[in-house]
Image (cartoon, rainbow, N blue to C red; front, side, top):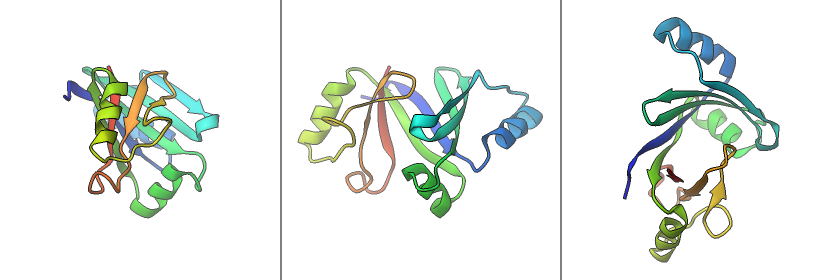
Length: 133
């Protein structure tokens, strides 16, 4: 079912400081910097093979990402697996008893691709996300 690691999102307190750290220590510059005011996040996106490595600073401490960062500290927020036909995958997962976020278990990412996110109470606490691609 999993084709590849689509993206890894890590949460940080300061996106720009992490961008500087990554450039200084690993010689990498982000492919793009983005601020999504409507989603309450600031991203630095790095392309590593077929995988996006996303450094995300939550802009709203009361958002789900903001609360997670406050409770867990910086680190992996979720890993998204690339799958074919994410809508069918979401239907199949729901039929197996998984609870998913979004309308009919599918959401559109800030970059426009479709995702299915399994709520942690259905996945033994692991942050599973599936992304079309």
